[in-house]
Amino acid sequence: MLEMEPAPITNVPPMFGAGIYAIYYVGDHELYRPIADGCDTPIYVGKAVYSGGRKGLVTFPEEDQAPLWARINEHRTSLEHASDLDAEDFRVRYLVAVDFFVSLAEQIMIRRFRPVWNTLVDGFGNHSPGGRRSTGARPPWDELHPGRPWSAPDRMPTPSKQSAVQSRSRIRRHWAEGFSSA
Image (tube, rainbow, N blue to C red; front, side, top):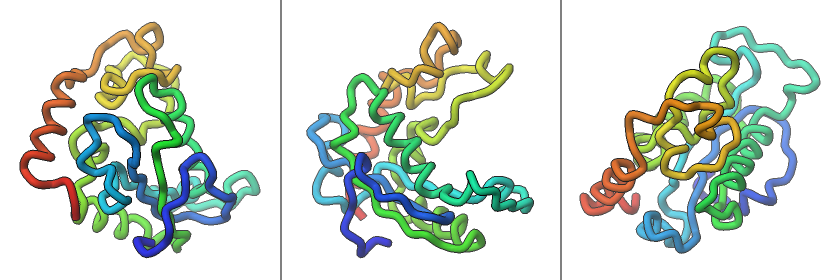
């Protein structure tokens, strides 16, 4: 996966299967400049498995044939909604893989690269909460990069325990400690 040419997250071709992916930032946002250097360090690493895969209850209905492609597109949508980010500034590498490999590969990638949206600012990978979960606190990622409709203050009135100021500080400290590249 790390040897493939990164694709713009706005133009990922359809694919079937589960897998792992890494998202990279290439824009000029001041906070992420230390990793906007050629797709060496991912800003986020994730996985996509078939429905029920986390619980060992894998099913393969027709609408669930492309979980990796669907998950990458969910992230594209989140980036498009963020008021201070441009989805055009993101690239993605991905690998279609068998389910039992996917979780292990994700853990290894997170340990190796320590992506800031996995380790310091939680919530980028969150799905729209259903039911009573919308009464919970907004994710820190949505405090830092507001815009997703489901996390707007009128829909999730409780602010995150980690403010945008705290998130920015944690990220800057991370870069200062030398974690800007692999």
